Image 1 (cartoon, rainbow, N blue to C red):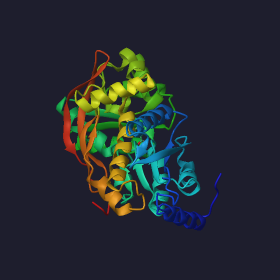
Image 2 (cartoon, rainbow, N blue to C red):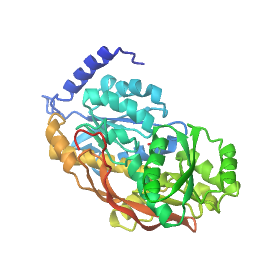
Image 3 (cartoon, rainbow, N blue to C red):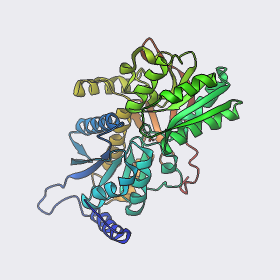
Length: 393
Ligand code: BEZ
């Protein structure tokens, strides 16, 4: 394992950045592979999310003949374990140790914060295929940092007004205690209170605990009109099942779509009626989504979900940039400029990037009806994250 002082990291990092400018073509006429680092969770609560992102990223590259900008791709995958404390060291392993040309990561917002501090110094072109940390396209934004997923604020702000419009005036919030959970609840609460709602209680569960019973008893005693929650992966699967088993289904359960995405089939009847907002829905009836879902099912034998979409689009944006520079990673400014201008034909619908490099996208209102995730409307059209604190916006 790499162990370095901060000065050592910076020295090695600038050497790594310089190496990105080595011409792609070797003198003997061969073409160097482009190295993509995948820093994702492959174990623990978010393992399924990391797998879906990886699958779909590789599928998008395979659709381009295994290349980006005409250069064959070499993948280096690293399990970040959703462990924020290990994030700087793990990022350095890929950026400094492996000298990747591009970094794709990660899922957990706390891990993303540590990763961003490193790539903010090294300048490695990084695409975030999930983590919603507002800071990534806020105070920690940078020319080399792109996100193909969402900001936590963006995924949850629209639900605040939806809840009030549906007569849910008194709400309890419950989430894991870490940046991802806090910020998702924050986005909801901002719009909910502005629209006239009252937050009765805000419950925080240590990450990644799935012991929900005492909190469900507390919610039952508080008798709110609704519960807003963020859990994802195996935590979301268990929470929705435990909520139903505790007899709480008459209290409207809502949250960002991570509550059901990727786990809906396993949640079964317990998920019926759950109301969510998200930038994607399985049932979106557009050609890009139909083609994507069929290809994913064919390749991996399972249904695609929002995480797969975000991974697919991470490859799409890199492909767009690399095509513009004919695979020359040394043409950094032109590469970044092309990525900034990309119009991504995503399975979620067309999206563009904001000045802070976050998707400007529709946020759908979805409800589980008859075991399916149905789109019941657009909660917010072309929503752009406010990019608070980003000097580029
Ligand atoms: C996050 O930490 O930002 C996150 C994790 C899982 C799903 C969605 C967001």
